[in-house]
Length: 295
Ligand code: GUN
Image (cartoon, rainbow, N blue to C red; front, top):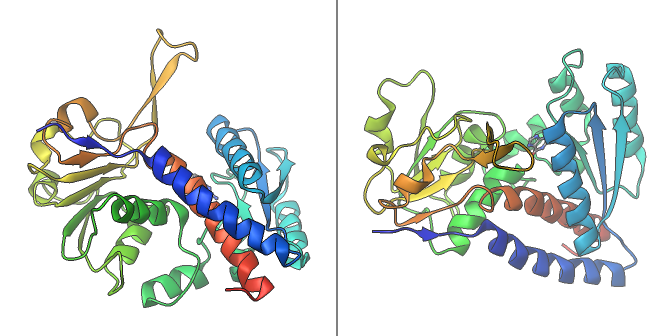
């Protein structure tokens, strides 16, 4: 079997078209959604992520402002910038790009963002609501994965989802999204991680396998059940002298081998990546709708 390739780029484009309509409706109510981004330092991957957020916002008509701070900015100055955005009534969403430089306490900074503007969904209030099944801003990458599954016809309900990786960004919140007794969820979820004995025993049982451990090409064909749906969250730079940039991106899945076994698979790039920014924009639009009283 050769797998169907699920294009996150196409699904993201469909959602962005829907968002454009919602932004137009907000503008009729005199409201332009406003996203404030804080970028500290010059980590190349972070700069690239922030650029795609700026581009995506512009594309759908969201007003976006990036506050760029040097790498040696004191923590108190970063918190001051968050306070300014928290107190600005026009701002609907705030995102602090991570990772932050080592001298800054990431937890302290993220907890400072007002939960009502936490469009990243990382604040403990939003994560607590997520776990309890209450309405909240969902973290963008796991929410994007859920949308990929649902919109490509692989409803997780009743399926065994195995997630490789227990990060705060992906693994933990994705498990919390997919085991809820809700539409587009209701799955049986297993999370495997570096402390798991014999990971393949679990991954081979997956109807839906999510690779999010940040380990290039970790998932091999013999770890995958015939006909499984495989979602690759990995974004790893590996040296490639034939490329202009000197590197290429690979996922956490050995794509070429696994695509011969799976029913469907997401590519890297062009799979989960474009969905993350799209769900961030969706949360920002939703926050503006709540504020405008049309949600
Ligand atoms: N760094 C990598 N992904 C993300 C994300 O989704 N949000 C933030 N704030 N930082 C990130």
